[in-house]
Image (cartoon, rainbow, N blue to C red; front, side, top):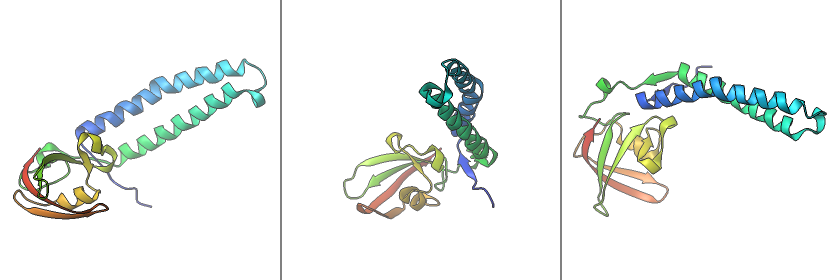
Length: 158
């Protein structure tokens, strides 16, 4: 089975690498120490400290495997690949809502880095998907659960 490519910005790659390093170097040791200490409390069958530590260890090891897989399949968006001509992953796009006339700027990122609260939207989201490949000045209509959105692309930067 082919693994899905993970699209990341350089910042997103750095964050995943830092998390992986932290889990391997710090959290693994902390949990191992907790397991060791909880074994000293006696009967492991009725030892909630031991159970909690073992569960946390399983979670950490699972997250490490996930991060390693994501990083193996990472495609980092090179800032040289980002054009100001067309919207791509890594572009910052300033839009004008044609109904309210409000302006909003989104950065298009891979799904792992999506953070709508900070105006980072996934290239796989309805809005992100509709913007990819579009040019400045185009009017884009996007069907979302709340209805039809109409945006004019004012600026594309990177």
